[in-house]
Length: 543
Image (cartoon, rainbow, N blue to C red; front, side, top):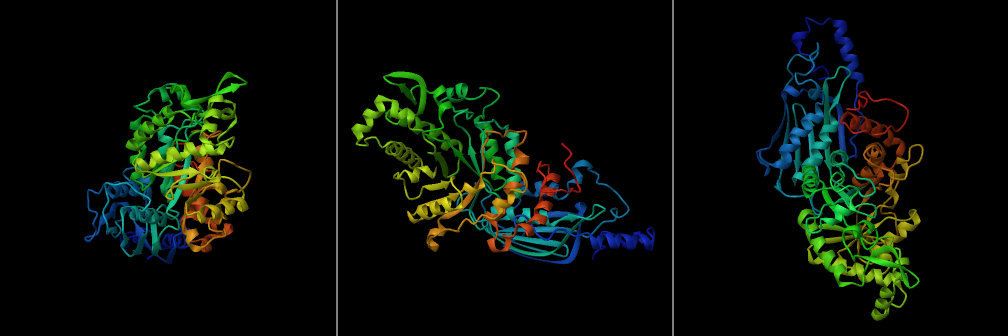
């Protein structure tokens, strides 16, 4: 079995000494036991099979609901063939050497899906479980949905490895796998630094390799408004860093969404308000609150003006357009870090608060604004995600709204998890995964040892934790350093959100697998930074 790539017809050409040398190299060439993220159940043996590109094929099983013509899986078959056999991209004729010329036995990957949704989008209810069985001459991958099949194809691709001569092998393996959490997200901030579309697409590729499944697109913020609205073109014309080169057209957005869809990734946009909106005011007059110095306007502006009917009319029209572009059922509305200084200075705002009976309780004013925006979103048949501040200010929000925790050390965010779930809300955890914060050494270990359900609460409360999210804020991140800052550090959270916690809690046990996966990312063109002293068989070539 170990010599399957060496045909008997070659034995007359290669002397016994060479055969024994080949045998020893083959025996001593092993793949790192495991896939990243670690499957729920995996068993493998030393029995292995040769896999050659000339005789390798993906096929649909006879009973599969998905058939040839399924956009998601047809594209995945082509993509994973290239990922499994990357040398073919450099040499279409494939390298020919003394061990590689004879034909090996055919190897097929039989893929069966019981529910077809080839033209749809992944959603909050998408099932991603799969079973994978690898034996002599074939692998059988079965899943309920195409999204589960995608996760299984990724696992299969990581099982294939090369020996010292470049021959491809796969070991006999059985996998039963499913995600621990349904929502496994990554946030990119494209306001503080514009990220070219190709950089976003590359990030989506890397997300699919780690089975992350939600791209949280923090598309606009104070510094710039790069989203190009058809209803309000001045938002980007005047609010983007540059109205032509630093914008995302709706064609760009749809390209990102389709690239994500084919990889089983949802795209959730964030239009954060009432704060973080300075760039909005450049293209939308009278949206922001004028600040005062005494009785005189200072010439500066604060958050969205919550006292004007026109503010809500504008937000309703903008968000309706956004829902026509972004198909996901979730929409992030922000609601964090609202500075009340400007509202306090404005006589019109103070008068409105008196009229509403808010007194000088400015969190009530923010609550008034956010409740209106969440209601607008609900009317558009979208589920709102908001930052934890909205809950902390005791705002009235629908039970189906999702709260995202972003502040505090473990004791603080554990208390927040307990409070939010006790109130019956679903929650996302991000506080321990703000990986734009960096420190010297292996800081991925901090992310890896997070326990998302380690808080005081009932089992019903813990079911309300739907997942978590890695956040990469953009103050000091652009296209030049995004990938090495993200990868492989984001992989730690990816495994925590997918895998069984008890099986994967040791960072020392994870390190060899993560090093191996980091090398795989390099081979796939992702500029993942090193974890420690060492090397990869295929170093990044800057291509």
